[in-house]
Amino acid sequence: MSLRAFSARLVRSSAPLNKAASFAAFRAYATKKYTPDHEWISLDGEIGTMGITDFAQKALGDVVFVESPAVGDQVGKDDQMGAVESVKAASDILSPVSGEVVDVNDNLSEEPTLINSSPEADGWIAKIKLSDPSELDGLLDEAAYAKHCEEEEH
Figure 1 (spheres, rainbow, N blue to C red):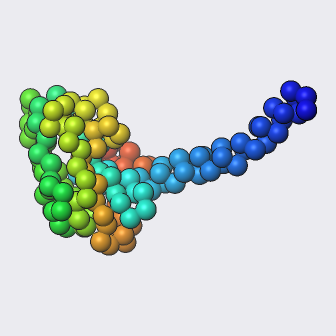
Figure 2 (cartoon, rainbow, N blue to C red):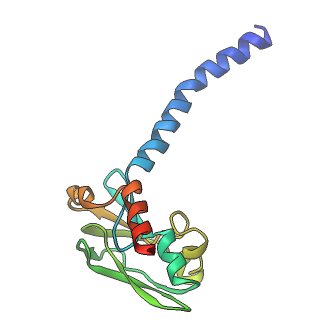
Figure 3 (cartoon, rainbow, N blue to C red):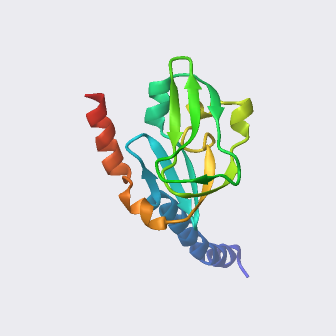
């Protein structure tokens, strides 16, 4: 088999993987929702990963302490589940959905500045197993959240 035929076969065989990877990235993007109080949640199956938004961390300034919920805690939509303290202020963390906390970001106890450097990725706060997925319908999509932030700035 020639190198050209081999590389063409290799490229063709990897095409479905690229489509699958693109779909997975789109699905994660499409299922990210926001609260008017500046929390975000990204859904993966029935588990939602949540944290505070970039807008919130900028308003807070340098984060010095994060109080996270405990694994096993039951949280209700809009219930306080922790707090973020910065050099300028302290703010409650409200749960965007109801469910059970199944994981927390232990890195935040040693490095709370992850909230500042990567609020919507490495600075996630907790993972919640949703008890009522329909609660996501009441949250904002990215465009609505961006508009909300613009209105808040003025």
